Length: 150
Image (cartoon, rainbow, N blue to C red):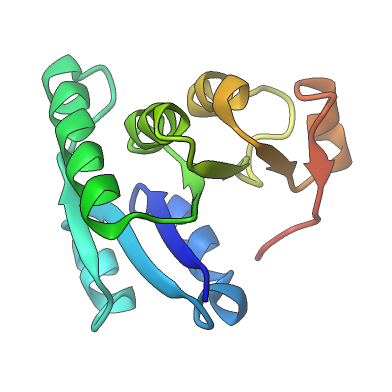
């Protein structure tokens, strides 16, 4: 059985990860996300590590989330990390790279014309970078198009 760490902000990012339920439900899994009502509802009964938020332009929480990521990676020891962003993915992906843990990043479906900041930061350390629209290949030419998750 594959051990999967799913990391994502709440809201649309979490919804897109949740759309992968037919896949991740068959694996041993752990989540890193924010302690928000949608996460508590969607992930009831799941193994979760709560990350610090807000993360946008918040350097102290980014640094705290490196600690959160390190602890979760060390305790859970995943085979692969999967994320749709946003900022919570950055510390997880960079630490996973240092620990030789495979990473899969899925660029969100609502950014067709411009790359997300998290996508740009995670792209260099992603083993597999997936996009949901052909148009997103303009920003990420080596990505793989998987189609819309939702």
